[in-house]
Length: 269
Image (tube, rainbow, N blue to C red; front, top):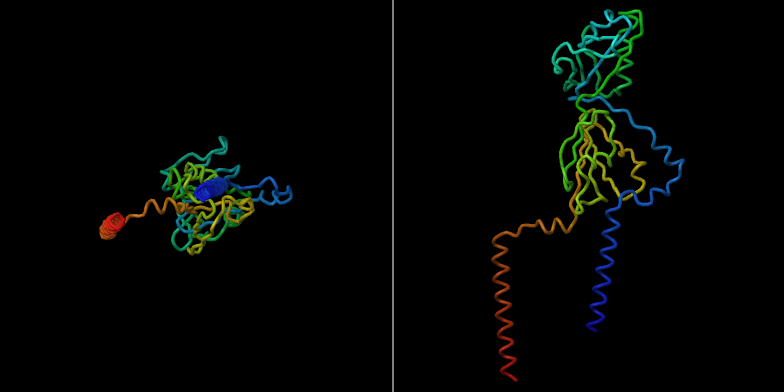
């Protein structure tokens, strides 16, 4: 009977070990996805402008004198760059709480909810042909594209993404990956929508279909939270002093009863 109990314990340990190993593997069986399905993951959603965004807007044309009134920078066409005129704070456009930016000549523009491409097209249409005779090139960039990774990762922090493109796995890589105790099957994503509301989603890093999810690519201000697994939560549980005292008293009482029972049994013999 004792050997059987030991054998059952060993089997249980092995099964637990296998399950734990499987839980740490990302995108399991992703190689089984067909090429047609993978081709659907090529498109990256356009980022939407929302209050609090800091935008770098550059307007260029061959006649730099004509477009200069619309810029906060001195546009140098010959060098293909925009030379700084003032400090960065003055060169960039902050989207206010009502969703507006204030541009030279054009005045207040409602940008909230637009993609970068839509905002570029809108600004271009406001300038040409009303003010100049050449269709300008308009470029919009996010200067504060930021995502945050919190929880059971090696380096929780907020990260600036210069190229405005990052997926879930890349974001976790920036944070040094999950600790071994982090739950890979239940990562929380908190997203701020252009209207100020919040959207939440639960992501399973083990699931190969994650790369097909609309949440695989992150948007600015997204927050990822990695939960610790049950064993880490249990190890972090703080026992109150009163509970500790009660446990000690109970343990002492049980020891005393065991001692008395042992004495009585010995005496009866």
